[in-house]
Image 1 (cartoon, one colour):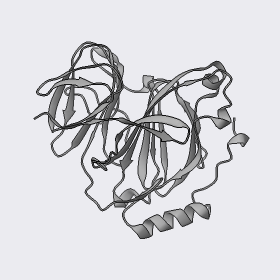
Image 2 (tube, one colour; image 1 turned 90 degrees about the vertical axis):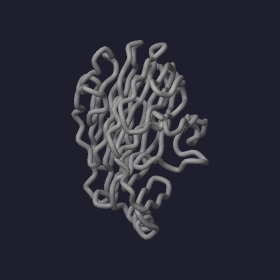
Image 3 (spheres, one colour; image 1 turned 120 degrees about the horizontal axis):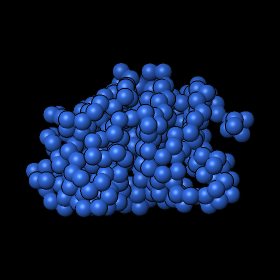
Image 4 (cartoon, helix red, strand yellow; image 1 turned 120 degrees about the vertical axis):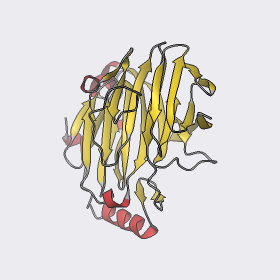
Amino acid sequence: MAVKRAIQAYEVMMGEHPLKQPLPTQQIQQIDPFLLIHHHANFVEPGTDRWNAGVGPHPHRGFSPVTFMWEGGVQHRDSRGNNSVVDDGGVQWMDVGLGIIHSERPPAALCENGGMQEIIQIWINLPKASKQMEPKYIPLQKNEMPEVPMHPDLRVSAGSPIAGGPMGPLKSAYPVSSVHGTSTTAEVAFEVKEGENGLLYLLNGGGRLEGYGMVEEYFLYHLEPGVHVFHPSVATKLLFVSAKPIQEKLETYGPFVMNNQTEIMEAMRDYQMGKMGYLVERDLP
């Protein structure tokens, strides 16, 4: 069977932000090493106050929060001095390791002029050996990633997710294959290597997956190892990621992903003591 399970995204609220969340659900806590997937699509009104939009400063430790862009982009600022805008089609990757404080706002131009913002953020666990690494921020613009043949809007960010396709330029702390964008009506072949968990999420559109049948928007498909050929019936926005499970004990609390409760308490203490740094956004451009 090509698909282990099909998981429908359900709507949740993150503060004032409505999201579609296919992972976790009440039935499935994680698909190792993938912990969480948030699909956010929202119209930003012209004249929006950028300091009260998006997500303000907050900490992370022990995993990789990764944001894939379709429309509108994101401005990232963090306690390590990084400050950049990743535009439509780009990727914002962080291996946060021992900890960082960052914010994710709509870019200033989007707040001023208005428009759609559509992104997916996915949380990818890090193995114990990498949870105390120095944080690393990797911004990739769309034109810095190779395109998938016959699908110029599908871009490969990491690994080799397309059978016979290009390698992505991103080197993360834990090996992951990833591709995102919009597929045309030509077929595309995703490859889940032996021993890996592969995930395919459709933001809109739909089509047929060989060996399985029809697939549709707002569903996450957990794929078996092998090559999975997708035939879109219309132009379809999608995300595909694949990686080997880490298979370590997991303890989580909000933005901290560690291996035991003691490490969670240490993360909370370090954040409160300022060991993850500080971020005062209004001093920044």
